[in-house]
Image (cartoon, rainbow, N blue to C red; front, side, top):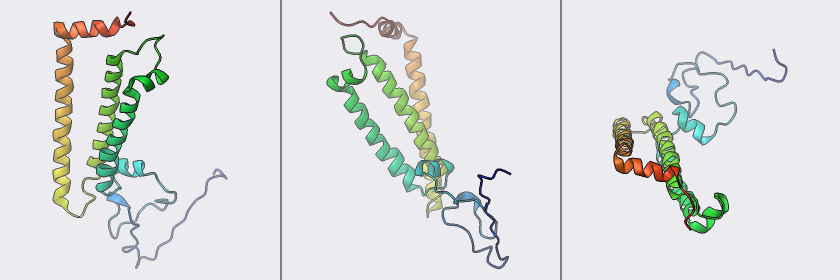
Length: 177
């Protein structure tokens, strides 16, 4: 056994074991069922709790999806302004390719949205009202279907002659004279 690791031994009286469910224990904690002795020994971050499905539903929705989307949009707006963009992305002496930056924003924004949906899905039933969990999961499924459809239409549009011209212009980007 490694001498740097600490072992936590928890003993419980069988009469009080049914009442000893730690707060925030998540789905695995049912009254009368033993929980892991190392649970909550060390504090976990908010994002970890959301992705594990242990946070209340309001956290992934309001903090991750709404507030996180606002912050991500603000960062993209700051980077998108012409003066600040030249500080971060320099392509010789001209402005960077705006289409590449738009593609970067789309990919990062969609990945962030998928992570937020995953957290909402996992925490859907961590609310007082069980029916709300079903409503939230239905909305996540509809939103995910819309995102997949949107990417399908975008990729399909790239196979048209106009889309091929767009791809060629991205590949042959040069500084305007």
